Length: 87
Image (tube, rainbow, N blue to C red):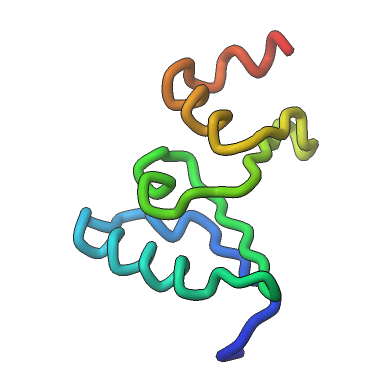
């Protein structure tokens, strides 16, 4: 439990103020290594300002419909989720 190979963090930014968000992000970033993986589930770019993703997946109706690098999260911030329905 103290040295996980895989961490799944589901909306850890929910209800956090900016100071708490930075503390949580710092902890997540300390876990990052070539031997570990983290799945970070969020709806907001603000968490990804502190935890830079290697890969971004968009889930829609239980399926991964789009995969790209961190630029995909920035596109979501700009356009929202409505354009996913058109893809």
